[in-house]
Each structure stands twice: as C-alpha cells, then as structure tokens.
Length: 164
Length: 465
Ligand SMILES: Cc1cc2nc3c(=O)[nH]c(=O)nc-3n(C[C@H](O)[C@H](O)[C@H](O)COP(=O)(O)O)c2cc1C
Ligand code: SF4
Ligand code: FES
Image 1 (cartoon, each protein chain N blue to C red):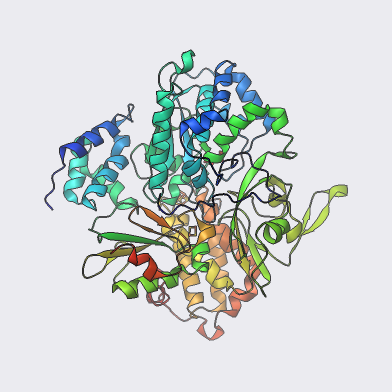
Image 2 (image 1 turned 135 degrees about the vertical axis):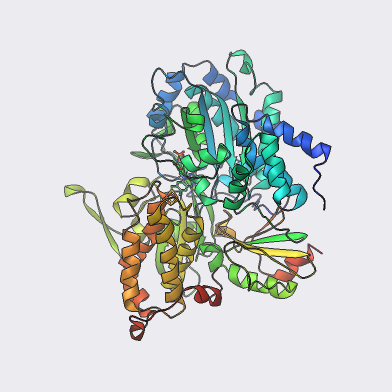
C-alpha cells in the first residue's frame, strides 16, 4: 500500500495533537497509534511523516517505535493474535494454546526472536505473538485478536472460527 | 462489546465490602452519565468545589488512604509534596497502566464505571490545583480508552469539565493517553517520559520526584485508578468515617485479584486487613482444586516475594508478637510487609503442589528480562542472566552451582538501580531461592558442574521465548 495519509485520518491526528498543549512531542505515541491502526504497522515513511508532523528528528520517533512492543515495523496478518504468556495464563494453558493456534493456522514460529516477535501464516491471514500479562489473570488463558479481548480460551478452533 | 469479563449479576461474596466496585457487574448499571447522575454522581464534586483545597487534602489524610498502585504510600501526604510557593503549572496523571502480573482490577473501573474515576480525578485535580490531567491507559485496553473518552465528553457536556466548572472558576481538561505495551510505563517516572513522547526510561530520584519535578519538569501527582476513585468516597463519608473501614494504618477497602490454582479465581473488594489469606483462598475462591495442596502464594503482584505454604511468620514485637501460618495472614499492607513480602498491587497468585517451582520462577524471569528498560547495567544484564539460568534449570542443563550464581545475580541487582524495577525483578528470584532451594537444586545435574552450556538453543527448545 503506498503511504498516503487520508485527509480524514490527518484531521483526527491533528485533533489528537491539541490534547498536548504544552509539548507536541507528547503526541508521538497517539500519532503512531493512528498510523498503525490504519496501515497495520509503522514503516519508514510513517516514521518520517510523524517526525515532520511534530517537528522532530526522525530518530526521536524511531527510538519510540523500536522500544515499545505495541508498535510493529512489519505487516501483521489480517488478524493479529496476541497470546498472554505470563504466569497465571501459562498456568491456565497459554503455551498449549499458542501451539494449538500455530498448528491450526500453519504458523511457523521457529524464526521468532526478540527483534522479530511476530510470525505470520503463509496466506497472510493470521499473525501471532506472545504478549506479557494482559491484566485479566483470573480468566486465563487470555488472548487478543486485533482489538478484541478473549478470556478462558480453551479451544483454538472456536476462537479462529470467529475470524474467517 | 467484545470479550470483557462481565459477570453480570454476580453477587459480591458475603465477606466482600464493596465501595469502589459497588457498580461492577451490577444488573441495570451502565457507563452512561445519566445512570451515574441518577445515583448521586458528581454530587461530591459539587461539594468539593465549595471547600477549601486544604480541607479536601485534610480529609484524604484523615482517611489514611494508601496508594493502591503498589507502594502503599499515603495519598494525602503525597499531595502535599508539591513545593510550597510553587508557581509552575501542576499536573495530575491517573496511572491506568495496570501491568503488574496478577493484577486485574483497574480494568473493571475503566470499562464499567468511568464516571466514578472521573469524579475522583476532578476532585483530586481541584485539591492539588491541576488544570490539565491525563489518564495513562495501557494499549491493550482499546475499548476502555473509548469508554473513558466518551465519559469525558459527557462530563464536558454537563459542565463537570472544561472552563469554569459549575461556575466555580476552576478550569480542567482531562485527556486519555494510550501506552504501547511496555510494563515499565507503569513506573511513574517512566510513565511521565512516555507521556512526553519518549522511551519510558525511568528518571533518577532524587531529584525527579514527580510531585516536585514531573511532567514537563513541573509538579505532578501520579495516582492509581483505584486510589483516585476512593477520593470521591472519602468526601462522601468524611475522612474519619472512611477510616473506620479496614484496620488501623490500613484503612478502607481494596480490591484483591486472585489467579492461579484456585477453583474460582476472581476479584474481591474487602476491608483491608479484615480477611485472611485462608479466607480468600478457601472461602472466596472456593479452595484449591480437588486433591491439591497449597504450595506457595505470591501475595501482591508478581514482584512480591513468595510465601511458602508451610512457613510460620512471626509478626509484631514484644508482647504483641504472634506466630501466623500462611492462612492466618490478614490481607493488609503492614502485616504482609512483616511477613517479608508486600501487599503490592493486590494481585494474589496461588500455586499448588502440581507446579514446578523452577518453571514458575522461569516464567517470571522471562517477564522481567523482556520488560527491563535497559538503562541500568545490573537490571538489564541481571534480568537476562536470571532468565538464562532458569531456562537452563527448566531444560535440565543446569548444575547445582548455577543456583548459587542465580542468587548472586539477583542480590547484585536490588538497591543498585535507577528505579524499583530492580527490586521487582530480583525479589522473585531471591525469595524463590531462599525458600525453595532444594526444589531448584533437584532440577539440576551435579555432573554438569563446570560444563559450558549456551542458553540460546535451550530457550528455543523449551518454547520459552
Ligand atoms: C516497575 C513498576 C511498575 C509499576 N506498574 C504500575 C502499574 O501498572 N499501575 C500502577 O498504578 N502503579 C504502578 N507502579 C507504581 C507507580 O510507580 C506509582 O507508585 C503509583 O502509580 C502511584 O499511585 P498510588 O500512590 O495511587 O499507588 C509501578 C511501579 C514500578 C516500580
Ligand atoms: S532498574 Fe531496570 S527498568 Fe528501572 S531504570 Fe534501571 S534498567 Fe530500567
Ligand atoms: S497473566 Fe495473562 S492476563 Fe495476567
């Protein structure tokens, strides 16, 4: 997809920036959230666009993108799945859930590492990564699919069926 | 609405005492402002706007409200740390990052009772003189961010926010700021850096105590969601009456979040110190799973030191000294500290005898290795080494001497770092080794003494990344 920020999105972003009357730089995270929501990830052009918008050096934006696990530099699948791997969920079976989702979607996680935490299925439909505690520890295993939250996920099939 | 736990109609457990969670899961309750106003919503704000600012702070002090975010610091005292004679703008930030493993309470307030939080926040802003405030919500609560923003718009429309609130001459704007998946943004100075649009590297204290030098280097009050909600109830009841709930120096109610090996995990608002660990596990959570025995409890979020099920704890001094079993421990700040751990964020993780201690500790070490911000060498390197060593233990590739190394690494982190993450990441390892050394050593192999083992492929093999 070529990098063009639609006028509506830019208007939304401009409105967001007004929430930070003291320092425009404070709007780095919200601007990136808007761009990632629209484009699926933060590419080089998004970094430069954000920097220009906020009057910053691009490195000031890139250092934010590379620090926060919530920002992706590569395109995810149509449905991006985050499985909580922290203690309470692991006790409830989140590692098994991860395995089962990967098996059913044909995702291969063998190339995953700290710098590339996301694995994508061959057809590009699903992508997956482990997340740390999603703050619903009593109802594990917990996962998110895009912005949807799922608790006590025992059955990968039933989960995936909702995301055809 | 997608996927939020609504246990609509769940009756609170008889041992609960609901104040902040009064409307959570309530049938007929919704997040709209009309519902809130029908039950006396924003009446405390009206009252507050007619009070002296110092009188509000006095009520909060009289109540003895201790912060519910983790450290248990007295809220009213924190508010008075704004330097006298300050001429800079003052900011207030609500910490809704809720990221300490085992903690899941703020999410229900954000999703189900946003106006309660806003009312508490507006009163707090008025008391400390803040005209601009932010609610820092973790990125993984996208729906909460929408719900809270809608509530802010409604409050604006009714004149509870904006210019000249209810004709009092007080102006205030509150905005939602969303995080991006980093645990360290819950640490208040890391949070402030994040809100300034930077990497969330915590600041060194002194001099960067937020109340003196916080957001944009101006005085800033950071409080947890639950703490700010209580402010409204303190005004409603009066500080002294509020302090009648709970116990001495551990006043009020707080929300406990129980997860792990119990039959019915969940969230429970109780009077601080009025229920014991045994009541929480056996009565409120339906006990352990059938045929299982209690092995350990992490009582206050994953950073809290672990308690062993068969320990006895001596609390109090002199004539007041008493011996407690784990089941007798009252759930309050001071006793939990006297037992060598902390009440922390209220997240109770229960571990039964089916669990491998090495596996549990390794899971936590993975968390801390992933979440260290990397500024301080002891924390960055130490958290990674603790993970690598426990990776080895779990994979059966460690020697008994590794357990000593593990302990040594942990001991060399805490007290040597910029922020309290240093303690947070070393306490699990320190306490697990101190209390479960035999079990950890049993998972090692003496014949591997001195062997060179790379941890990297082990991590992959164990699926632990
Ligand atoms: C590593 C670390 C993580 C923290 N995470 C949170 C958090 O997720 N939520 C929170 O309210 N406080 C968190 N805190 C505590 C905050 O720094 C701060 O003390 C708290 O928000 C103050 O609010 P209170 O006084 O109302 O408790 C964390 C502290 C540390 C050291
Ligand atoms: S203690 Fe750890 S998390 Fe805190 S500032 Fe140092 S490196 Fe960062
Ligand atoms: S451990 Fe998974 S939500 Fe907390």
